[in-house]
Length: 202
Length: 237
Image 1 (cartoon, each protein chain N blue to C red):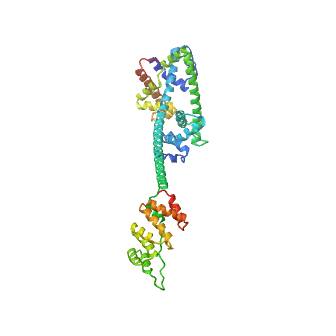
Image 2 (cartoon, each protein chain N blue to C red):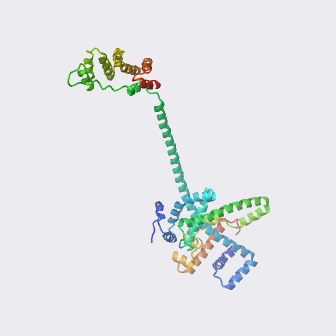
Image 3 (cartoon, chains in turn green, red):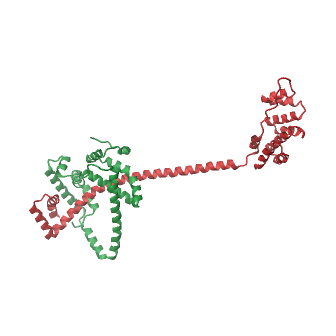
């Protein structure tokens, strides 16, 4: 079944049954996700501002994370049916995201103060940081990988597909082929990372 | 690093739970005594997390684009709303200003005269016996002022003078109109009305002082035009 979630049709999204949305997302059609985003964002921003006294940035961040979790839950099959409305589900996740953000921000403030009085800890922290690749470097390395490798890694790590599903999705012979491909892609990724940074020791 | 590459399958099998029991024991033992192996495994796990984060961020950046588009549209709407509020306020102020101007501006003499000039229906014309004013009145009622004026000018009476004043006024000859009204005698039943009309003719010809004098007299004599005279005097001319 093919769904046409045109960008200007978000008003009718309310009338679409959740399982149709789930099916579209699982089929790789992300358009309902953006329509849901447009449909609920402003309401969420107003709600979180009123309920949790959030800033616009905090609320947007929480809402984005809530939408990402929703998406991931659908893709991984953790969410197959709803006992509440879509909006309630997203807002519930969003609420926890807000609380986490607020908790994290207050903790960060505490750590900042701590680092100021304990230089040794700061040095140790920096040492640990320098050992690993940064998120940005890893993102750049992924983007340098061939398209099929990017697909394998995305299906495995983001969509949490098992090897059988990856093989089906990408027309590989079997799960073993998919597994070998994934290992090869990880090696390619390591190689790209090594090329990108000769200073950093892995 | 090359050594690390060789470990990838091992790490994958361990993480996926695809090792035999003994292999797990050996793997975990190696983690305990081989620091380099342990660090390599930790970094492998960190990269796995970073890959997840990368794809999550990829989608998040698309949401940010949607955010930007929505915010821009919101800003545009707010700007239009602001402009609309500005123009509405401006229009309201303008309307108010015009109203105040109209409401409180002193009316011009001409407007005042037009407003207060009493309608003169003319004398009734009898069907049974012909009166001396009948032809003049018939012409007057038909708006044939020249004809009516011609007839009335041959009659010497206060009534004729009064109607001549009205006719001259209707024809726009205010000078003649004033002259005719002035001729109406104090004893005539038309006197008060002729005086009142004379005051209006004076007003029309900017003889404000003369006009006020007559109007004040109407008030002090308590004529039937006293109230309206008082009203006109109240207006700032």
